[in-house]
Length: 479
Image 1 (tube, rainbow, N blue to C red):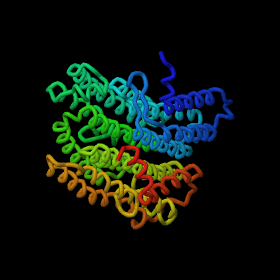
Image 2 (tube, rainbow, N blue to C red; image 1 turned 120 degrees about the horizontal axis):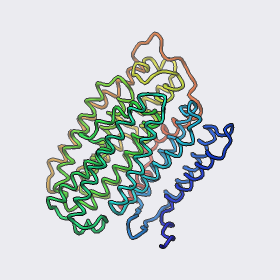
Image 3 (spheres, one colour; image 1 turned 60 degrees about the vertical axis):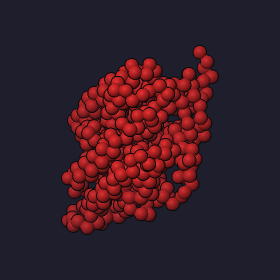
Image 4 (cartoon, rainbow, N blue to C red; image 1 turned 180 degrees about the vertical axis):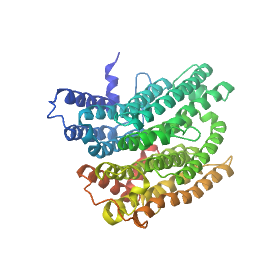
């Protein structure tokens, strides 16, 4: 065995090293030294160091092509690592009540991130499935991490059951593909796979299994209950980091492995995208609990992300998708940082009514929340407007054979953008307009929450106007 091939897996190797360091630090430190902040700083520093090999990674493959990395995959790894770092920072306030388990929490985060790395760099369905399970199993532990709350255990049970079912469906589809083509390697499948009934069924089952991870309709039923019951930092991590890895992986596999079958999966995507955006928006309007509200918002955002995939230009689609995930990370994590601050610092729940009159006592927090919601809604001049524009353009880019339906899907998405503006403004209305005799008192957010909010707010404001960020992604995608 040629162990030098591990040199082509520098991001994964450094993340494994980070996992080992955190494990022994938690195991070796005395109880009085094993503080949340200490392990948090250690994990944050390791993640910052991890950004360097991700940022500088070059095209490479290892172990006969089962592991493959490209510049656009390296960019996505950098984005996911940055999102995980924000989660670590915002988790400090919540972990103060779980100091005994902070080491386990950080190790589960890093393990999940490692699984997403392997999923993104997979060169065969075997490596893809191993990476998917490496990401899913620790995620179930994170959802159930707050053992003192019944809702957390219930959320984890629903997540595990649905994840198990979706994995079975996906494996069923992969077995069909293997039976038809005789290989699991993406490069071989791109040549040998044809639109036979067996391969079409395999593709449909595979898409159904991965649609669960992305929360696409009709595979979204677990999302609201899991988001509500999971700890707030875990909910934020689940909504952005996990979704970003799954969407780019799906885009790569569809355009690389199933490109010969585009006439079959593209119409399926049109229907799923329209249903996902519309149902997510309509259900969000009815919510009064903020984490359930963000769950249906996340479902709708998944539809917007997948808009980029229906485009005929693979490079433009990957660029728009990756940029959308980047903007979505900072905007959504900003919202969840505010929710975490209100929930754990102010002692309030996650009901939307708790935000009535928030501007009267905590104007800075209300203002940051407003900026993040405006970005999610796509209001200029914030970065969310540019990310939506790019996915709309990618969705209709290069459409020659069926020009009507891609434009119709984008038109439906534009109408839903107006609907999303309405329900995002419900929170803004509660904070600024709704009268409340006893609003939440002024409270200190803590340095960690302030740092997370500062990082996210800078990203929301600058990513839309700094063209170098989009150019960096476009160059990596080969545009």
